[in-house]
Length: 176
Image (tube, rainbow, N blue to C red; front, side, top):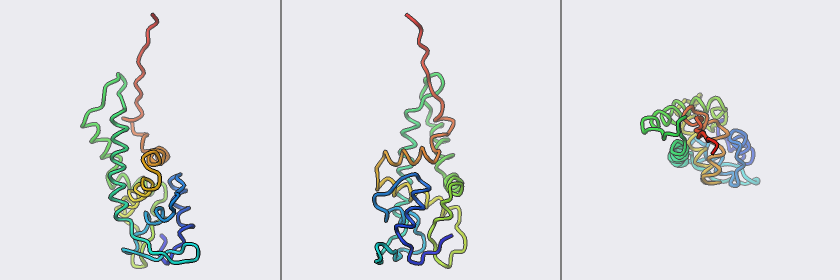
């Protein structure tokens, strides 16, 4: 777990880009998404120090964006007989993919826990920290590239592989 000691924005952003498959236009957003060391830290960019906020605001945005994009996929999905999925099925999908425990599991699988910037007094990264950082990364992707970028990242990270979203309705066409 990296301790925040004036990380280099260019270097740290590459780690986040490798995890997400998204190339950030604004590299600061990528690093802010993994910054949990303090309310603000100094980072190095082009051999100069820059202040960088922690990831709390990005995590709030990312939480909402994750729900929005997943809900749109649920809304468009259809069961094997062409039926729309129920509200209860949305709740199950949301809880099984967007809960803190689900985000922490997925985040640890892809290595988010290894790129979180923490203070020297934080010896381990908790599951809540991983989930919060995951949300912040999605918030950063949204700020950097919008809905389309978030959809690509969520696809890359397997969010749309849930059983409800992989059912495909294929209408039967009879010859005339």
